[in-house]
Image 1 (spheres, rainbow, N blue to C red):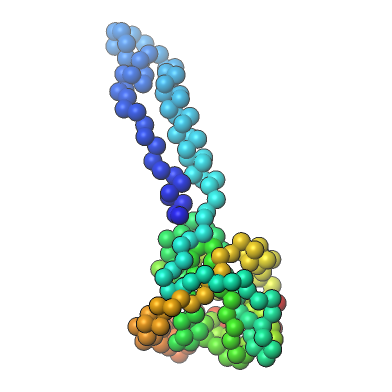
Image 2: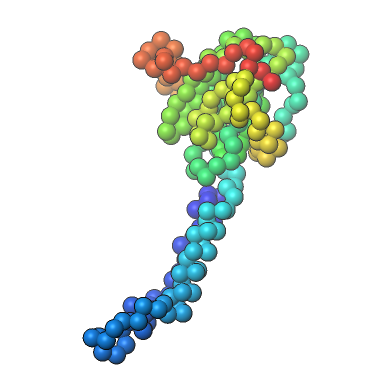
Length: 225
C-alpha cells in the first residue's frame, strides 16, 4: 500500500464564509469587526491539523512484490563453501511506487520494492553490479572474496550503492534484514532479461569506459562484513 493510501483527503462540509465567521459579518458592516474565531472554524482547523499530523507520522509499508520477482525464504547466514554471498537491501521509505532493478553484468538478479532485500550467491572475483531506478542508474565494480558476505543498499532508497568499510549505514543492516520482505528473481524474468540486456550493456559501457566512468562506484575485497 502506498503512503498516500493512509492520507485520504478529508471530506470537509461545505460552509459559507458567513457561516464560518458569523461575528465578522452580522450586523452593520460599518461596525468594528469582531476578530474572534467561531467554534465551528476552530473545530475544522483542529481536524485538518490532526489529519496532517497523522500523515506525517504514518509508518511506510512494504511495497508490492514486482512481477519480475517472487517471495523468497529467509536468507542463509553464510555462503556455500567457496562462494560469495551478496545482500542487496532497499530499506523502507515513502517511495513506495517505484522498483529498483538489480543486475550482475548482463544477468538480471531481481527487482527490489520498498522494504525488500535479496540474497545473491555468486562466484568470487570481479563483478559489475548495476541498478536502475526512475531517477538514476549506478554501476558498481566489485571484487569479492570467497566465503565472505557483502552488503549493498539503495541510496536515498532508490539506486544501489556499496556499503564500504566506514559507512555508518552498515550499523542498520541487521535492522533491515529483520524487517525485510525477502525476494528473488521471478519466473517471468527471462524474457525481461533478454529485452533489457542491450540497454544494460550500454549502461555498463558508459560507466566503465564512456562518459560516466567518473561515476563508477567500487566495492573492494576488504569491504566484507
